[in-house]
Image 1 (spheres, one colour):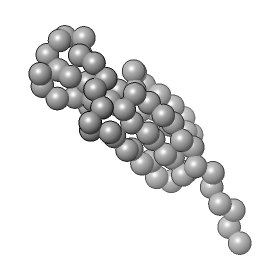
Image 2 (image 1 turned 120 degrees about the vertical axis):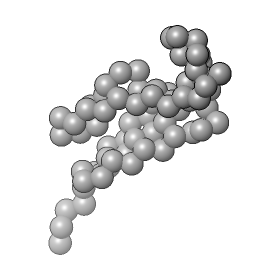
Image 3 (image 1 turned 180 degrees about the horizontal axis):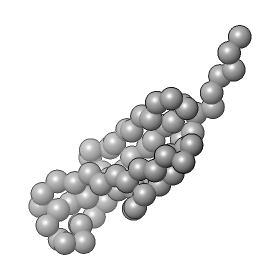
Image 4 (image 1 turned 90 degrees about the vertical axis):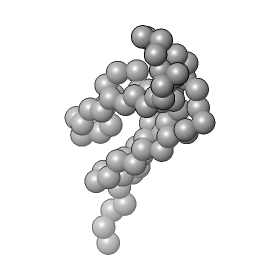
Length: 68
């Protein structure tokens, strides 16, 4: 029987990542308000705050926003 892969879960500002070893799933709370962007032109919904390691040396950066 194959060994089950452990799911790596990462919580961020307005989002959750789940990595099962072969697939990365991103869940975003679109009702979240993470504040105004640095430029002041957008409302941030979710952000990783830069690049994050999601497993096996894979990096990801996430910014989800809407116009003000």
